[in-house]
Image (tube, rainbow, N blue to C red; front, side, top):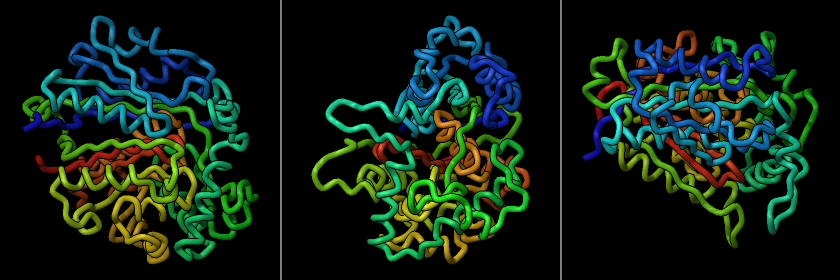
Length: 385
């Protein structure tokens, strides 16, 4: 049996369009020091550091790990970088957790980040990859046709995305770290916002954010000694698939379904909708909440939009989703997956403040990336697995 792992420290920066008050190393250090403070530890107490961020071309800064060791306490220690496109924050945490599970290290610091204001992610997405064509329209231009395919196969009402966006934007008002806060947000404001990539409106889209997230992980006996209750890692899973192959279902990718099935099997979960108290999932465009409800097994195929309509994913619903405001409210791409994990862990630690779900004991963190081709997931529990 793998060694148990607990999250004993969590740190986030304030997410904003431009964090010009700090350098890239300063941004990472801000999150790391907050995580260490939460764990009442120092860099000296950490055995290894695992970091992750989205493609370097999004910021125009190549191989930043080459000069980050000193700033994040990794000098003389193992420093690993993980890369799986937009899901990297989740997969970075999973790799860090595996070092505890395997008994390789006792305490690991993991950090993910993005400083999009350093460059232009839209430009980064227009590059033509080998044997393919350039998107030229950013991530929204890539995902809009998939949303149309979902609407056609499911019969989802056209305001499904608006309803999800309204929920997440209201949740963001309860999160002190959220980037995008619109105090007077309402349904009409979202519905009347400019159509960017039909059917995706401006206020159904994620912002571009600067920010970082960090977590301190510890093996069982050290986690038990932590000053605050740990979030115990019950299961982790990752899967990937090619961006293109004959018969690929990009609306409900096989890699995501396989990862979820593996995750629940490891955690002993038979009915995820009943057994998981709340979830933080990667929703950069509002329609993906309904789509991932099906991919994650919370709803039958073509039924995910009904959870949005019934209010099941609201903060007071039977399965609250993206209580923090989600990626729609803060999108530091490389950090977004780890933020989902951190927020899910905060729920079982009772640290989520105004967006805390009462009685949350078991939660899910989720990330995806690339052309819906990389998936990483984790189940956290207030009790040991």
